[in-house]
Length: 158
Image (cartoon, rainbow, N blue to C red):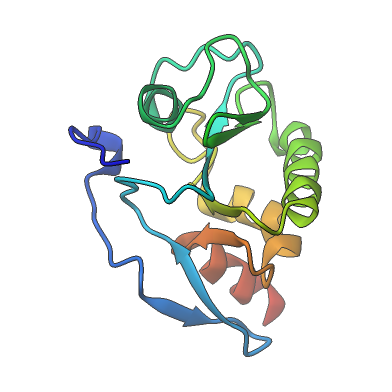
């Protein structure tokens, strides 16, 4: 599936083949800043609101190009997976991230490309959201944004 007209939210392009080594010496790929297309087994993971009103940022992109469903604010939909980020503080996001990681572990046949959920319209910083994904680091079918991986590795070295 080829997607044209990427939102301003996705302006900065990176090479998806670039790799980073985690503190556990696991070589991993990370989610590109620009996701133009997905393979049949790939899933675009984005921040949403509980109502599933995908009006902007990655949520709008997910609805437009990857099958996110208007009115569904949580979980798998088409080739996308919604994690609510607009309902309160970081502590309200964590259970949804934990559910996502469990889901991804149950579906090793899928590859999940996690965007910088919560760091756009929701207004959180990478250092607030990234630690929620620490248990995803090293999972072979979960790609995290480089910014999240850096924060998680910094925390591990403190």
